[in-house]
Length: 129
Image 1 (cartoon, rainbow, N blue to C red):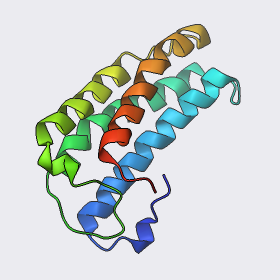
Image 2: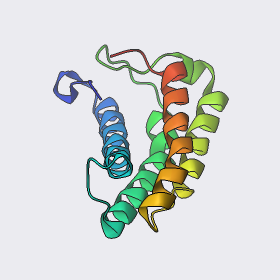
Image 3: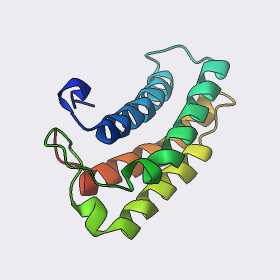
């Protein structure tokens, strides 16, 4: 995430960005394991899967209100199409739950839907940083 939390003035927007960064971090660890950039560690994979589930579950709550902050990359489309945004967030949460961390092969097989859910939502509801 390229947003600079320090440049953001509204506390709710800061919380929103922090949540998305935590989800990004958890997913990045899993992607790095799947790609072989990090050694697969079942315990670490499970911890990051849980963090991703927790973060994606909180997305609608953190975006419910629309405080104005020029440093935010959230598009107005989120609040203009709240139902669609909420559906994307719920889908991401479901995809996070389906990530299988039992072994490297299972992780590789189950990660793509989560990545697609994130990219799809960002394509629609996030301004390019």
